Length: 135
Picture 1 (cartoon, rainbow, N blue to C red):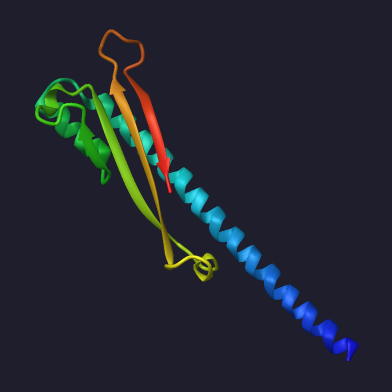
Picture 2 (tube, rainbow, N blue to C red; picture 1 turned 60 degrees about the horizontal axis):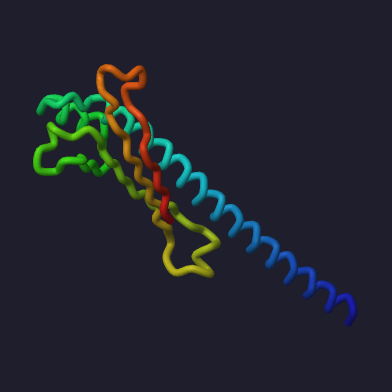
């Protein structure tokens, strides 16, 4: 009887340990995806800001540099007058064990960054103004 009780206890503890490890892996995957997305958005924002030169061609080059990310200019009515650009992105991270606790089989991670063109007289041509990460 004691051996059977120990076997049940060991099986229960093993199941709980595996569930906790699965949740830790899911959470680490979410944080790594968030950090990667934030880094990509910041790089794209700096690249897009470098292209802003006060012309329509500069705006188009900035849109191309932004890639697939959502882009907003500081002057939405006249983008060619914009000195800064805001990029935002969203990505879905698949879950394996956390979905037992949280509804859904994936989690959205979001990131955004604002970069400003500093002008031709500045030694630094573009600067990251603000970076935001949301979960």
